[in-house]
Length: 155
Image (cartoon, rainbow, N blue to C red; front, side):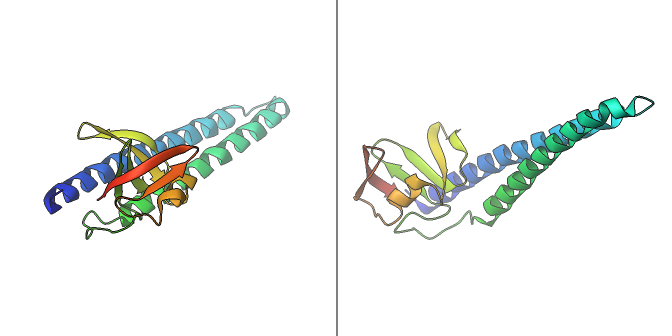
């Protein structure tokens, strides 16, 4: 694959990953605000009745706050992945791995995304699947969960 095509594909993958991660952050932020508003509405003379409700809302708000923090951390990781990389010899953060059965993009654990008409499984550099392929090169095979993969290309 020519350098310009590799760069364009990586930019498209990064943009889609950032869009998905930003959506996660926005959803967590919105959910956190909605729970906080619900907790604030229960004020007045019967305040004691709503105390346990407010406590439950606080727990939910804290949960969404953690999700927001994780989403923002993921965005920072994605922003550090360079769109232009020299041709890598082995899988690492930001590389595209094309096997005989599947395409992978090493970034965050986001699952499957479609870019340029192709489906890519976006996985973390900490995932067991990545660890199974980490030291491999083009032409090597690796196995994960009783399934064998042959690396056709590392972009």
